[in-house]
Image 1 (cartoon, helix red, strand yellow):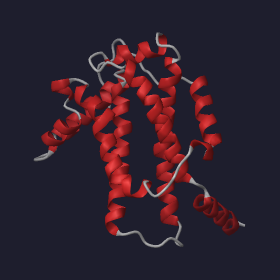
Image 2: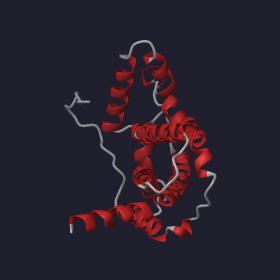
Image 3: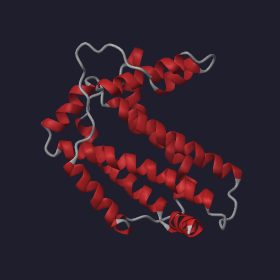
Image 4: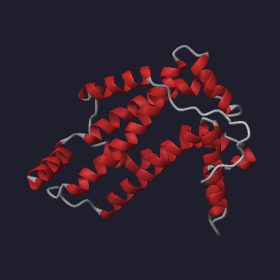
Length: 220
């Protein structure tokens, strides 16, 4: 009984089109991200993000869609990676391709993290400062990495915003291009995913935590 359940789970994991789902979620994230970026001001991150929810037409929906679609993209990409590892019928991938795709997951994670920081709310700002101080504490390369990724102490959200909007996206595309260019993906292939993300975004707001009076310390 246990073996049959395990084999069924393994077959479902291997046969489901996780990669296609991940790319469709990425397309939704990109479309909604363009709408959100038109209203975002890196000089006033929390004000512009919260104003998007309140003042912009359907702003809360677009911000929620960007948040949930981005999360779905990364989670589905991780499941796709696990499915590839589990599927022993696939031909072994060349080391250089495997390395590039692994690094693309790191770039995708940084894309999510910078978006988390850009909200400028209590948790986002704290997460950014914690990450920056961790990098600055690293010997030799810490300062360089911080200047490339965050530089929040000197530049506020400018470097984070530039990386989220352009730098990390181009890095991910360069790392994953040889893999994704082999496949044609259309949103009609995943209607349930698309409708689910749209419905979720219409019903549930994306996270936004205001500053809490009297709270001056956050554990990393």
